[in-house]
Amino acid sequence: MKKKVLIACFALALAAGGVVAWYQLSHLNNEGAQQKVSNDTTPAATPTPTPAASDDDQPKKTNDSTWPTDELFSAQYARATEILNKMSTEEKVGQVFLARYPETQAEVQKEISAYYPGGYVMFGRDFADQTKSSVIARIDDNQSRSKQPMIFGVDEEGGTVVRVSAYRAFRAVKFWSPQALYEKGGMNLVLSDAREKDTLLKSLGLNLNLAPVADLPTYKGSFMYARSFGTDAQLTSNYVSQVVAKMKADGLSSTLKHFPGYGDNVDTHTGIAVDKRDCARFEAADFA
Image (tube, rainbow, N blue to C red; front, side, top):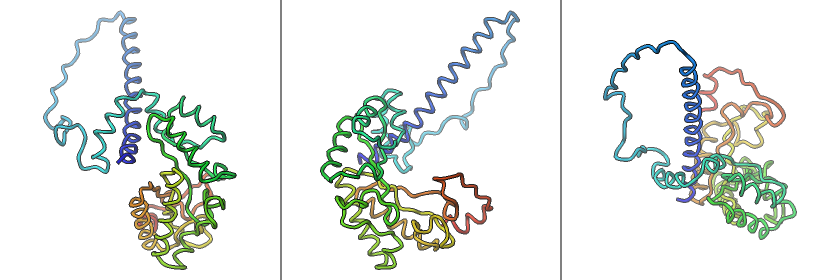
């Protein structure tokens, strides 16, 4: 419940930021209009009456509340609104950011106090020369300094991308890639591995894994092939849905990555990818 409320707060914070920007822009426009009128000696024209809005133009309400009741986070909107109403504009803006974890704990503490970040993504360097106890202590300390529960995420895909299990202090061997697990023991092994991964990450205080990879390459030479579940769209779709359900049951948030079309594209860590395929190609291959 707390996790859903936090995610809803993120969504509402984004909306609040937009409202603030709209208000400031409108305020500036009004000031500019008033200044123009004060400097203009030409008599103002008689304004044309604006027709009254019809019932069809009025905003629709689903019930006595201003929030819809049939959306993903509808059950959390009321509580999220209560939280947002107690936050400053600066705090709302900070909650939108999932930042790179700083190199020192002193920097983390300073950022939490000054910028109110919604959370951090931790990388390999943040687990090097650490123990389970030290990571738990750091994350617990950070959570205690934040007014709102924070997100602490990591890329623990398995295979070539592992941040935690890369170090023996956390696991004897690195987590295997999803492809290797499936070839060895089918979906049962994939899901049991997901459960072990979820348990380890949660035990450290992490609550988000930036996985699974949902990209769909069409040939083994693709940049994303080793990190993907393979070239079969239906198999990949089944894998993603089952792993996400398992992570949800284990109380760990997931992220489907990266983007439709990225499966056969270049490494965007080193350059810009431009995909000129037509929409029919995406519908046939990437939107399983």
